[in-house]
Length: 173
Image (cartoon, rainbow, N blue to C red; front, side):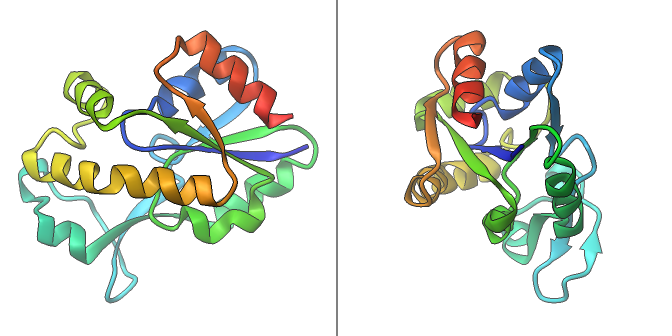
């Protein structure tokens, strides 16, 4: 059985897909919601708290990274030997752990759709500031290109949630 890594740019629907996978009876984790990731100072490697929205400047993002715990991913990969497990997110070090994923699935949206979804979401504030939105737009194409180059299954995330999840499950086999 596989550990399936489901990723994509901000606003692509990773959390929404995760909730639908859970509803359908699958084990699925969110790198943000399930305590699998944390913020770190790039220079020291020290874990830090995420500051308030107003204090997250472009310089702060330059000096910090949101990383997933390799130990926690290894644990999920071990457990995935007995059943499929989905890991949903986009931490900075996700591609350092590709040897632990059996499959990578990337949700694809265009930059305009990303902007609309981020502006309209109420599940988190990331991307609400002009500086964060600028970062998201900068990362958007790079995220998609790197995953495509790794051979990820690319899924159009502008479809209905049922179609997206059906395609995720088909790709996970």
